[in-house]
Image (cartoon, rainbow, N blue to C red; front, top):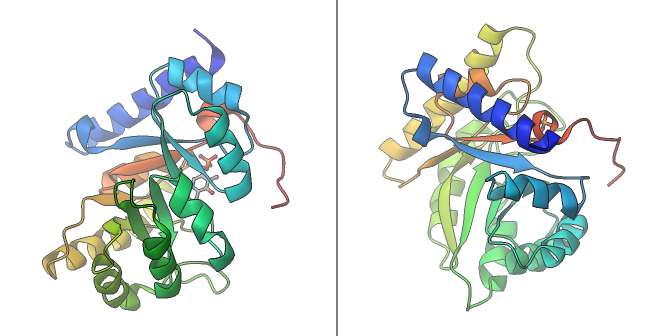
Length: 231
Ligand SMILES: *Cc1c(COP(=O)(O)O)cnc(C)c1O
């Protein structure tokens, strides 16, 4: 097996162990392989090792990669910030967007989603730990935005996404992920049909799964370390 294949296997084992520890079925957690900064050959290797869902942060880089890999049955998730002038590319090329945090961006994505594609799956990004300069809607505004997004015709609201600050201990990681899980359940109790809680990365996927994550976004543990990226 290739390095990427071995790494994927190791990440799947981490997910399985975390699910067992949390007494959750492993089928509840989807692995999103974050391929930002890595080329199409790395994605091909991961696909050959059974991976189907890939996450990208930089729209232009992703659009080029998606075109080069059009022969494979892959699912593409936008997990980077979406400026208004990039919504058309995102609506045309991606299957999911995890980073909706403004109604205006959601409206544009809905208007620009091509008619021959299924509705675009979206998550609302929540700034769960209140970082001043961070993307994401404040937790107390998530319900209102979710209701408005759920009403847009060409979007399918799937859930919430968070990127908390790195926490020093496992318990601290679980605590912040548990806040996101509580908000997710509040929104469901309010009547929104959500099935996706996108949280957990290489460093904290175990804590995220313990708190209820249904989708972990893992880059480094699969593809290796990234050079610093300017975009
Ligand atoms: C880069 C990135 C990841 C993957 O992070 P790793 O620590 O490499 O696993 C996950 N989510 C988002 C939003 C990212 O930007």
